[in-house]
Length: 216
Ligand code: BG6
Ligand code: MG
Image (tube, rainbow, N blue to C red; front, side, top):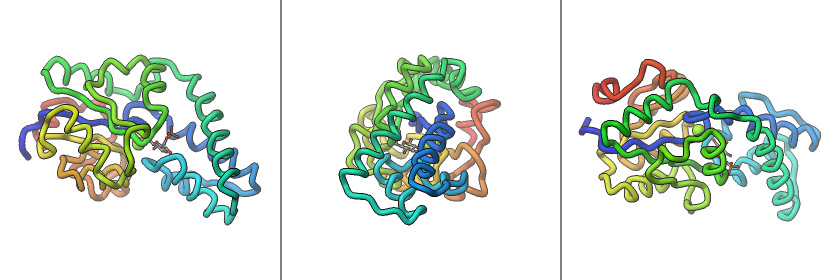
């Protein structure tokens, strides 16, 4: 691989485990509409925007809503999600990620955030990690969601680094597809059996640093 000059990070499931809160909030909405949402079904929502996630959840339950009611439900889900997120503290960053971001900073390698979330900045502030990122590309900036490469291409452009010299850290299948479509090195965070299109899959940032990245 060409040497890595910038690292782009997904937020949910890579920097912090907010997936559990998305799941609780979507599941409560589903139950309110009369059906359940399993953890397995919740996997399909990872990396997918709020409104697209809503459509998937409604299709799982076979429920149809008016556009107005969809917006109301999505807003209510987000209020509940943020209420759950506000329980987080800086200790909730996933193990090893802060150390890896420090290592990048010390070596002059810029970091960017590439997330579908419209809550990205608020969550990074909550866990005191906003200052690590030289650019934030979030759900408020993108017009095409993952698996489209836009989110990571915008991050690379912001950092003035060619795509081929960027590494992406992602826990979602759609996010890995987005990174590969952008022509970047895709490091999966999770299980190799799920993230089959990643260049390499690691369980997390413990025991992972620049030497390991350079060896991929
Ligand atoms: C992604 C999550 O990071 O952000 C998805 O993996 C979520 O589950 C998406 O739907 C949008 O998040 P938000 O915070 O804008 O509702
Ligand atoms: Mg994610």
